[in-house]
Length: 189
Image (cartoon, rainbow, N blue to C red; front, side, top):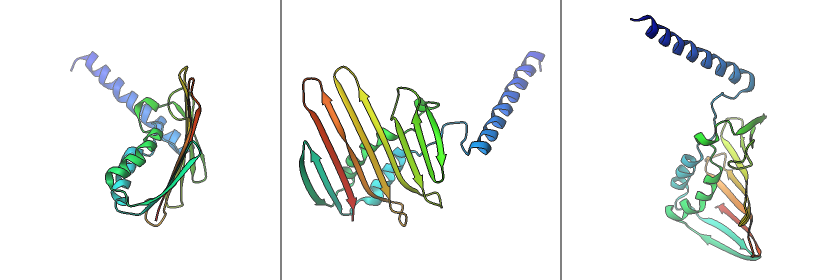
């Protein structure tokens, strides 16, 4: 083996060992791995559609002050449509790597945005056996055409690990139009 090839291989191995050790030290001191870790929300939501399919849903929708209550048994297509909005909170994407400050307090982990991309804040609360109790988030978008603010909340049943209830609320203001406030709540019975 040539000397230059040996030096390159040795450099790569040394770099890998250094990065791995740094990751282990950070994980031991902060409880967080150096690479960005978050709940794979898209996969979680897909699995919840299967679990919740056929369950009764009490749904309250309020848009522009008009409220409607529904009691229904949504199929998987309706459930996927209702829960898709929560994909906005999915931080398990390469584009968000390094974009969030992460704070742990007891069983709660809060992801606070540092830059301009993605949700402002996402909070994941777990119980003592690491099951997700709730996921909450805020998302704000603003440009010359519109201003939009959304709050999200998913609550989980500890006994079945399925979504117990959800809420999606906020407003949207388009230029030259009134502000439209909305609040959508769902509770599985």
